[in-house]
Length: 274
Image (tube, rainbow, N blue to C red; front, side, top):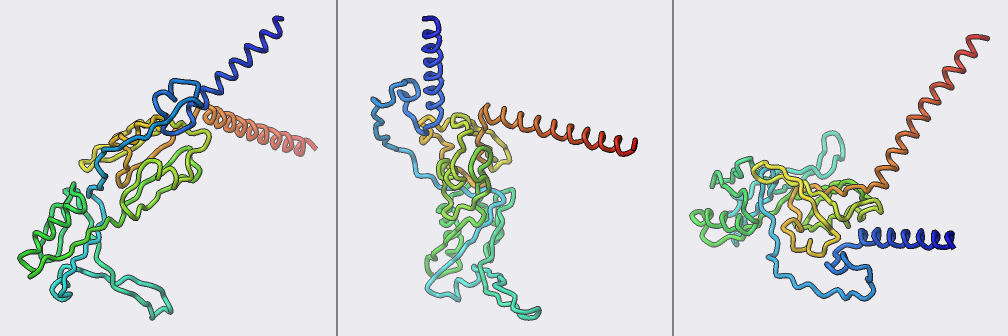
């Protein structure tokens, strides 16, 4: 009887451990899911979002491409500086190239040096706000309202830690959220802590912050950190199992190295003795 009770007790402990481990795996759980073991009976209600649509803001060290277009290309030409971009090298003395728009580097004060107009402060503005500002400054120089387009050329984020494919990713549409970033990196591995993801962010004033995010909680989609900014770093923390495995692996490597050294030394001594 005691043996049977012991087996039942062990089975219960394993079952509870399994439930607790499962709770740490799914993304976007409701409060009931996080605090209730009976997952099958829980109905996940639709979440209605009233959050403002995200629009990236220009920061120092951003590379911008700015184009000005009107019905008269010659009138807009002074505001569209171009550079020659090499396409391919056919021989030592024959290089084909094509013109491309000059890129503008935003300095630490949020300024760019725009043709004809001069210094413009666009740091901290959204693209739409920057376009409106440039249009306003172009009024004295053009007979019609121009079409101004501002694009960020170096909008990128990095994903590190317990993901399948860590790396740095360029975002062409200048908008990416946490889950899209994880998808680009191949999602978390089984060793990633979904309840302890760290976001490293540098603000426009140079201040760096580390923000902890719980991706198990469905309210993460309302977080001000749900949408990533340019140059954000997302770090997925490894769980204790991965840490222990790494420790064991390092210890094993060290011991194999020591044993290999001792064997080599013993072989050398035997050779000398002969």
